[in-house]
Amino acid sequence: MTIRVWVLLLLQLWPASAALAEPVVVRDFLGRSVQLEAPARRIVALAPHIVENLFSAGAGNRLVGVVSYSNFPEAARGLPLVGSYNAFSLEQIIAAQPDLILMWGSGNGAGALQKLERLGIPVFVSELRQLADIPASIRKLGILAGTTARSEPEARRLEREFGRLAARFQDKRPLSVFYQIWHEPLQTVNGEHLISQVIGLCGGSNIFADAPTLAPRINLESVLARNPDVIVAGGMSAAAPAWLGDWHRYPTLGAVIGNGLVAINPDHMQRPTARILEGAQDLCARLDSLR
Image 1: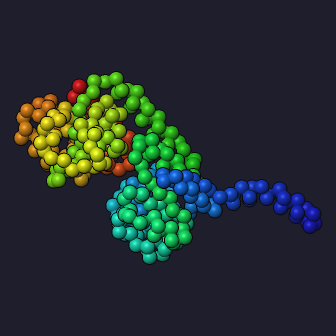
Image 2: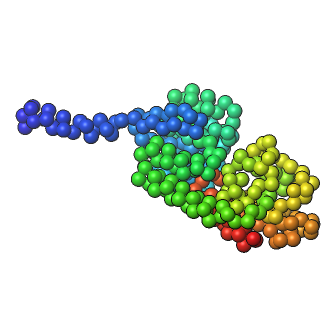
Image 3: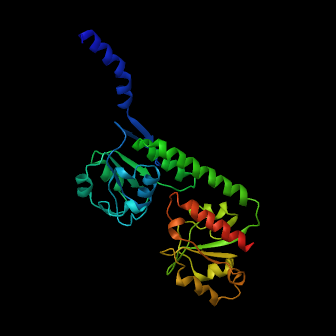
């Protein structure tokens, strides 16, 4: 084969090779531009919900480091740990040799972003506050990992199903709802929280939507005064928490009179992942049965 033929072949192959080498650019949830020379192949994720969303994006096999409680899906169990979401090890992250770090903006601790940026590894910040942020996150993660063939259909599925729920329940009789994260201390969410949006999606209204902080601690008297139609308990597992039954001590409470004491799997409501669709479907059905 002559040199001329070799040159022609190289010129024919060059556009495809160049395309493969094009950088990947995604804007994270802080508005930062995150750029990679190529789709990420070795990823460290510093929150359980980010791990789960990466699997939803079809890129779970790229994980080389996670934090404790990264327990879904099953394939996430047993992955190498780099600490916990609020006490991760920079040394272990470096040892994992990632080409991308996924961090939780409000959960990884003050100064975490600056510490991670000093490692010289691209950092994508996840901060999911709206239902729409969940499919958007899965879509962005798919772009970063080059798995859009999986991430894009999943993102569209979630957007479609959230829309269907909204259309089905937007004109239903509203029910006042108290979402109880925990009992000691008594804790709930305000109207800015993603859980409150799920309640609204189902035609409910969060009785503490006006609270000034995202996850406020409240007193018993304030719950009794606002007299919710429904009390939804989170807890620590899929089983109904024992403390949900404590509300029977207040027989004049609307939620007790109307049998409106409801337990929801907290992993389906309190983690901003695709599984929140299951939580929303469950809650919407439960509220509808109480109307």
